[in-house]
Amino acid sequence: MNVKSWIFEIMKMKKLLFTMAFAGMLLFEATAQQTVVKIDTTTETRISKLEKQVSLSKPGISRLVIVGLTTFGYESDRTTTNTAGVNQTVKTSAMGNADNYEFSPMFLFRQGKKVLLEFEPSFNNDGLSVNWANISYFALPNMIVRGGYFTLPFGMYNKKLAAGWINKMATDPIGLPTGSDYGVGASGGLHLGSMKWNYDVSVTNGLALMANGQLQSINLNSASRSKAFTGRLGILPFSNNSLEMGVSGMTGNVANGNTQFQNAQSYLYAFDFNYVKNFNPIQLNFKSQYNVTDISSQNYVNPVDTTKQYTFSNHTTSGYAQLAIRPIGLQNKILKNVEFAFRCANFITPDRSSFGGKTTQIDYGVNYWINWRTVVRVTYEMMDFKNSINADIGNNTLTETKKNALHIQFSIQL
Amino acid sequence: MMKQLRNQSKHKIIVIIVFIAGIIISVESCKVSQKVASKSGAQLWSENCQHCHNTPDPTSFSGDQWETIGMHMQTRALITESERNKIVEFLKQSVQ
Image (tube, rainbow over all chains, first blue to last red; front, side):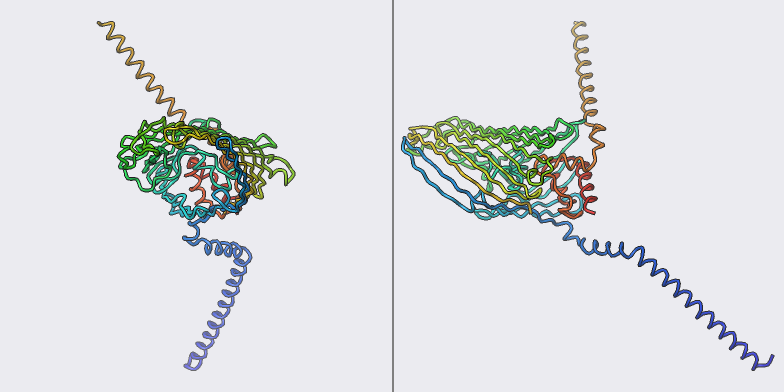
């Protein structure tokens, strides 16, 4: 073979190799295109769905939830005061007051699966305040440890039922003795066979006794070193969770730095009862709470003559019972959202004290639920207050005040 | 004298037996009953939520938001962790 034919052979092989490479590329491209087509038809929808989810799941957004509530409404009332047999009647109406206006966004920030921050500022007629601002650590399956400013575990109403969109009436029941406070606490729920129980305990700054013997429910700046211990034990005896009964206690020194009340000790108790059961087509909802407040025997400065002192049995009771009925099982879309509610409450403050008296509160309500978290309420409330007499401190006139009020209120959970 | 000692021992034994029986009964009763353990998320959602407010519409929040709200509700309603997990899982599934 000469050189010419050898070069010709190489050229031929090159052509063949080039043709084979080209064919291979075409084949590869075709296969690749087929794969792309496969992705398009089977996976693309899923991928785009996932892409959407990922883009929405930015940590700061997914962990922070802003909920809360707003309430607004109208109140028209007539107050008749009978002082020593003389009647005086005043009629008022208001678009916003503590019962009729509230805007409370609630910020919930979850850090992983163990830490939760809860913060609820609130704006109403009294101004801007904070309902709670606390951090919870989910330490054990049945134990949450928390610190900060939180609702005290005393009774059921304040912690679970007071929210405007949950409450069955436009107003709160009278005489509930506690609110929120600074401190630390622990809570949790446990099964007990077919039953369930829960506990909630806290150590906080505590309450403060005012000069006239009244207990200040919120103590933001405790001047004493002693703290208040509060706890509630709840039991749900039925496996369907329809009934919960709770017993609460709170004790602590309430002198709050006032030397006159150095040994003033408070003893508070509460019993609560909550029963919710569906008897098709009716949902029955019964709630009640009874509170007792006792302050150890103290001497108080006489407001008429400050050089003198007086004393009284500082024993206060309050309680309410509320029944709500809603035909949730009806087919009719309007009727199934109508709820009828009735509540009676009383509040008895110490006899012979400057704030002694008896108050009764009767409420009738009709609520219309636009959806599960939006309600329009009409509540008619009758309040009756009679003061106690103690001529030694200047309370020598019997006064009876009757107030009838109509509330129309809209409330929504945001 | 011996009789007195025997009586004291008997009392001690009875107290110990009662104490041990009490512990066994307490531990046994703390176990979750089969009826309660087998409850679905939907059933727990229905039973627990309406205790305080209307049962929420699962589509009201996203899955991630239900995780956070579930934790918040555990602090409020004091449901158990297993109940919370089941309810949140049910709500998340209902959202999808």
